[in-house]
Length: 82
Ligand SMILES: [Zn+2]
Image 1 (cartoon, rainbow, N blue to C red):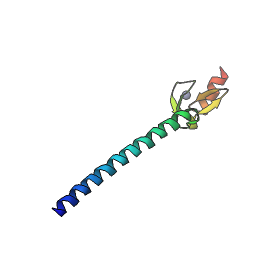
Image 2: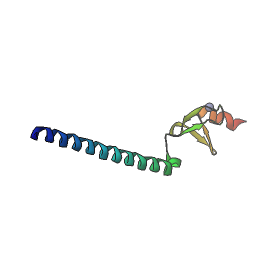
Image 3: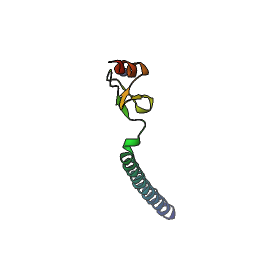
Image 4: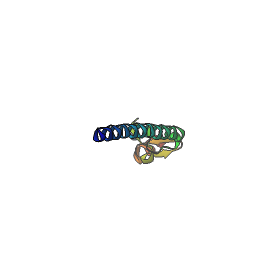
């Protein structure tokens, strides 16, 4: 009977720890989402459309010319020539 009780207590402990871990993970993920939303404008991995060919490129790889994003320096120049 002693062994059975020990197993039951162990199972309860594992279940409780699992429950706490899942709740902590959900809270951590929730706060991450909040941070991402708050810093959304600064997110360098955001996609922007090329003003010339409408191709989507990561903002950090885009060329910026007079307020517009371009997929390449060629397109930035091509639009400027118009
Ligand atoms: Zn382009």
